[in-house]
Length: 223
Ligand SMILES: Nc1ncnc2c1ncn2[C@@H]1O[C@H](COP(=O)(O)OP(=O)(O)O)[C@@H](O)[C@H]1O
Ligand SMILES: [Mg+2]
Image (cartoon, rainbow, N blue to C red):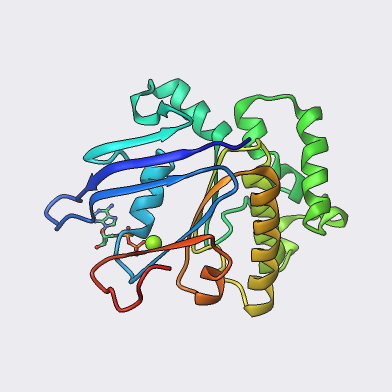
């Protein structure tokens, strides 16, 4: 894929609050994994939501392969996001009454894309995540580590250029954190996805190509 994403001169403040982002700039190319750290409330989720087109910044641009995403019309923008941006959250955010395969296929369903083609891709992803034997299991019956691996597959199903992960290991124990990061890193590099990953965990930050620290607390300098 090798998609680049550029965040340029971002500014954002919530009403009646001091600014969260002021002149924030970041450029990533395909296959790059960038870690974002910072104290609670420093604006990490705000940054991801802007990068993912969920929140429009007060000023600045988000450019994906040269396309200014906030310049798009609403309908094509919603489709564009589903097809080009994958999200992984701390609490997995899977649909509990659907099985593993149907959860992974959710973006395919929403985009009305060719199910047969993407089902093959879903099964390949499950295989690379050592989960192929769980394809038909209800997600409610999976462990946390397994659920987060299903979330990886769902995030990758449309072959997005950009992957955004908001504290994705925050609900995992140590062993599952390591396994998650190894699998995520392998897919990011193999599929040349531009990934921004928010984390509190130094161990997780060590997997990143670069680490950016947000906020006033500069005791930990960016790597
Ligand atoms: N929807 C919102 N309305 C008002 N203030 C918000 C909203 N979302 C976040 N904030 C505030 O903006 C700041 C940054 O929040 P956030 O981006 O969630 O930080 P982080 O993810 O680093 O913990 C915090 O002070 C938070 O309270
Ligand atoms: Mg947050």
